[in-house]
Length: 114
Image (cartoon, rainbow, N blue to C red; front, side, top):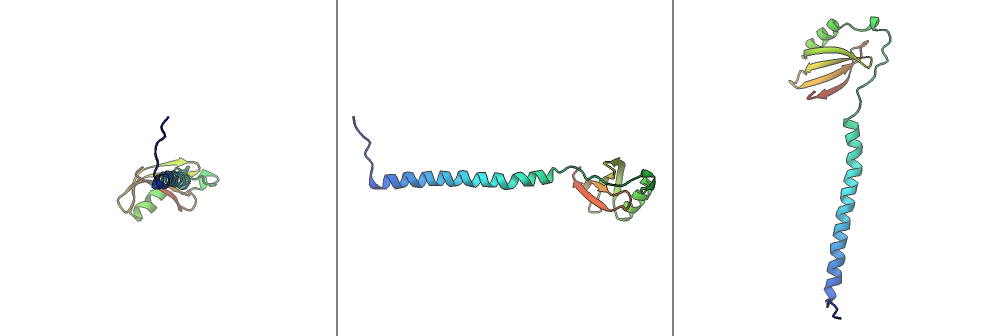
């Protein structure tokens, strides 16, 4: 039976190749660990507002007036999770959905491209 002949540099080359493959696999694994939590953050659920009785909320016309004064073009307003969910175009010209606290009118979250 013949054995493959190895030169002294062959083992070193094989080890270097294996090391590079292992390093690449570890690098990709670490990228996955870092990007997984980031994707969870960007896919976060809409906020919930502890806003009490809807009779005390800013009305839809009041929210529309406030936001149009700030430069928004309002397409629609609905109640969602105790917040005002407002669809439209931001002052920067970006189509977006915004969540606003119904008592204060404070902006809570803006989702671009929605």
